[in-house]
Image (cartoon, rainbow, N blue to C red; front, side, top):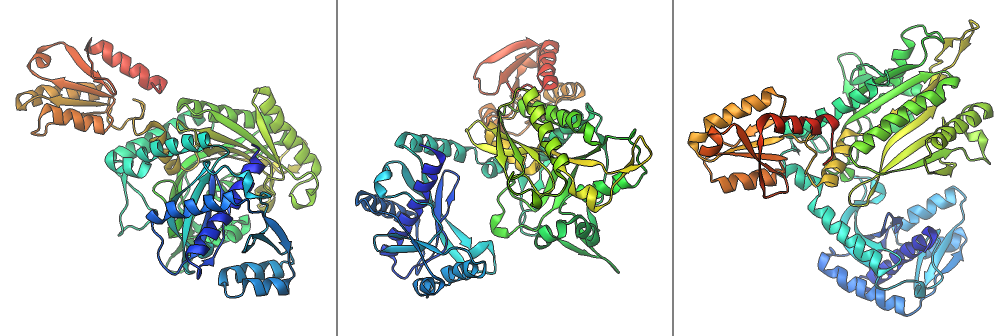
Length: 580
């Protein structure tokens, strides 16, 4: 089944769900019912609260409707006719008013006695749907148009696939994903917390979580250092004028936090690019100085809607690895290649297979893009050359490029088969033009550099949420907050355990001693729950031995090894950042 076919089925299922809901609750007012990844949803203004135990009955009714072989008929309408049809439904009235204002076609889809304002597309009839290939899965509250000041509707989510087998595989994956849910594991593994007094979307990283964040930042710095990216440091606030000049104000003004000083107003930075532009422009630049590679891992802030916040996946305080390269046009290939290498190494370290997508101009509408044809053609050809050189399979998306330049997106696939947009190489002809950046070329004339935005992990919080679920909390040794848990059998074994702990810490390992007055079994269970890579149980025999008795994560066997050999083995895993 093609992507278009399954999208039509999912869209049509959202209408069938609305039909079933309207039958059960005739006073319902419909919101919107689009398709989403793996399924669909519909938002309802219902006369009563819908509950999880109602979903099986709604699903059963949908299957009955499908078996009736109901057709989907597209109906074009005038504004006057449409106004009569949606009268009394404020949500559809609002959508219709926008269509009329923008002079867009007005269409409905009719299925039996159900009609809905909709642009489509849909299947021809319900006999195209396998009744065993979809399921209603969950409920949620959703503000109309995502605005907290608007009414909150009830949203029903469904999933749909081309066959029962695909549905079963997806549901099994979802069940495993729930076990690995990063918010639950984050609490169990003592990684992060949230506080009502601090505010939603503002994570507090506990010691274990801080170690993870620091290890990721250190690794990113190490990779970038290998390619001569230079570290910079910028303030967390700026005057609004900076973002007005960069053009970001219009896009982010509703997501900006304001900071009022004694005599001036500032904003918490919603992005870092303009600051890096200011660093570039702080010094006169010659063609010999280029490329200028500026990199840092820093915070930025977005006033996201409360309803859109979720654990570490969507936060207001965002730690981001940000790199900006300012180079000549003839240096784009070399600089993009360096970024490609960093991104490839980084994702390989975590065991992420990568899919690559190239976004280019709409070939039929060059006018909406900044920069001349020559620059765009050369830039797009350069990025294609890079991917071809590395024998990378990639998908080209025409018309998906930003107005200011083409880009390469890297999508990682985790251990549950889910795809995540992580890394990006984005060319930018806009900011150098807005800020009139320049360098002196070899002929002594002023020229404008090209800017390249590079994100490797992107939001570190979001990346960490993905890692937690990817590994199920069982991080590789190099990344684990506690690498070795020492378990004294009794109080007499605490001192030799602490002595061993000091020795291992001096060697560079992260070690904890569980000296609680508990049984060895309880201590082992705690270490297993915290997914510690190695446990060392210290009793009378072990305290007197020159060897270590090691139990590795996931194993019930205890291995006896020499201390020096084991430390050497663990450090080899850490140094290589092994995922085993």
